[in-house]
Length: 107
Length: 125
Image (cartoon, rainbow over all chains, first blue to last red; front, top):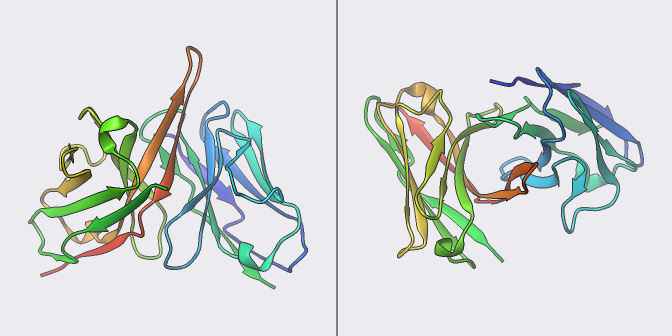
């Protein structure tokens, strides 16, 4: 199985900050990477598919980049509704696997 | 607007079978797409369980394949999950989701969107 490692596991930031989350794959996955956001008690919501395609309705402050083994999710200007846990997911090969999550908390 | 809703028992005894159904509204399963199941143990990360095509073709996570069955009923516009011989390690929130598969001759992308609200299944005697 392809292992996905996110860093950091958690971070504290303020509204207006620029936030970057990293996802590293244990082998090359080309651009077969998705990003999801999850709020407590809610299901994950797709933000970005097949890096860097932003889903319809997702604010442009979110962006994804990378290829091969190293990927980043960037939030250009953090908003109050962005405090959540973010997961990356590889779909290069089955079983599809997720990162362990990065929790973005309010500083 | 596609919506999904999981249903099933919230408590299952060890060694028994966990059975869940995902009702789809706003879209006819018989038209297309894959449909998938993902689970999340309390306080932990996400694990893909498996997916089924609208015609019935399936593929599963090898770590669960020997215990999992996913089926689809287009007449009821729902799909189902069975996990056999459950243990406490199967305690999780179970989500169903539309599994989008887009492909060309040189690439094939997959993602899950949208998701159901999820249902907590506890394995305990």
